[in-house]
Amino acid sequence: MSHRISRRRLLSAGMVLGAVGTVGAVTRAIATTPAGAQSSPGDQLTFPSPDLTPYVDDLWIPPSLSGDRTLSMARSSHRFHRDLGTAPTWSFGGQPYLGPTIEARSGEKLKLTFANNLDGHLFAKDIDTSLDGVSEEDRTRPRTSVHLHGSVVRPEFDGHTENTFRTGTSMTYEFTNGQEATALWYHDHAMGITRLNVPAGLAGMYLIRDEFDTGTSANPLGLPSGDYEIPLIVADHRFHADGSLNPRTARSTPEGTLQGPMIGDTMSVNGVVMPTLEVARGLYRFRLLNASNWRAYHLYLSNNMPFRVIGNDGGLINSSVSTTSIRVSPGERADLLVDFSGLSGGDTVELRNDEQVNPSIAATSGAYTLPRVMRFTVSSSRGFTKPAPTGLRGGPSQPAALPPATAVSNRRVVGLTMTAEGMALSNLCYGDDPVEKPRQGSTEVWEIVNSTVEDHPVHLHLVNMRVLSRQSIDTAAYIKDNPVPAMGTRWAPPADRYLKGDQQPPEAWEAGLKDTVLCPVNTVTRVLVRFPTADELGFDPDAVFTSQSGDRLQGYVWHCHLIDHEDNCMMARYRIVS
Image (cartoon, rainbow, N blue to C red; front, side, top):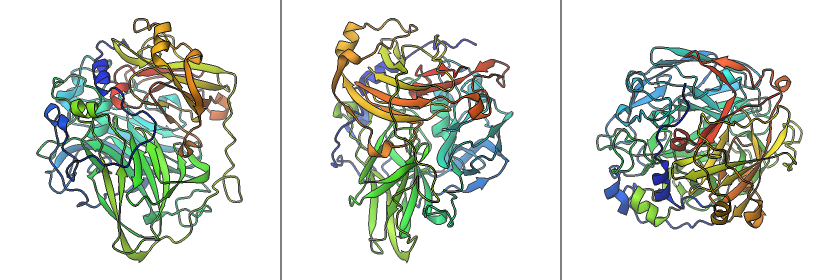
């Protein structure tokens, strides 16, 4: 098949979104908006959702499932808020929206068959058939591909963006779970329509358990479990007046044409708009996932109460980190402990977001700050009373400590680039050569140079990264001295001559193993990556396999996890060669 993107519209959206997301100090000032934060100066240019009262609906907690099984991907229905009508949605396994939480055991194979029973696309009118891999058939028999994000898995079961299956067919995935306990998530990864399939409902949590983090009350680490361990899938949405999902942001973008990122104006958690959760006076473990298309969140508790970060994408960190805030970009997960034992029955605490948005961007895109995420209401009952653990690795009845992340001499410079044609990875679109080819058994420092106008969370399939540092660059001088060629020619010059200031260490909550790393604008982000061997994995990561449609495929992909960017040139193939 032809991999070339035939039309790119991202630049205009990117220029509108300008300076979004610069890493730096943020304030606790909440924008002046109604209770539901549905009003802004940009609403006349966008599709505003109805004003909705926060904290009137209980948090829905997806059921947990384990063992080999078949999950149907099908149309469902769900009410996102009490004042909205029942909306058509997509889901896994017969849920009203999203999918069940899958629980698996480390080192034990799990076979999941996903049956595509989707009777036409939920957002058929919004499909852009000029994008690579997209056709008119996607409106009536949409493609799907299930990617277990963060998993160590054979390439044929990775949810490759080209290895898709249509309505009326199914695919069985074998997940070997060859990694320590952690929180992954599964979601659609079909080329060109991921940006629509995921917010339609094709996403869910996937928890791996092991002998240390068992998910039961008998776990050696003393972590909350059962009713005190709760997934929080955070995402923003827009709604039509009838309560149905609206994937469009800008009125100026014609229906059926790729817009800039889908930017919601209403927060949801587990598919419930600004929900409330009653909590006992004790310790809770929240498995947080940012499943948004575009938004990053800077989260804190309204009473400035500290909480602990005990892990992220790849599992537990060595020691818990006490903090009053955390930033998560799309695709990232955070394992949090929040202790409500010092509060009284009847107290309320809100989970809030103060990720700031440039006023000019808010006026044109509707991307203003969404402050209200959810509310915790404290009951008078006592809950999980054990103290929050501090040391998590390297001690008795604990997993081995993670070694320090130290740089190596094997360096690979890659770019997040932008031309008049759009944004791309190293100025290449999905089907362009060359592809990155790290060697099995090697350890590399990837220097990710972001010369675009937005932050981008970068996700590598199969492997984990360790964040080493970030350092500002003089982007204007960098591009002036190294003119960007036409799209399709690899361009990722080293930024050494253009570095500014000192290297900044990773944030405390970024300790440990990461599969998705935020790469800020005008910055070089350095990450350490180890590429495993076939012997270590038990399979050849460079094996050729045949897709459901008969194409011969090889390798994995890496991409920006702003999903609309991923569908439009910010995704590339890569191979781990012997």
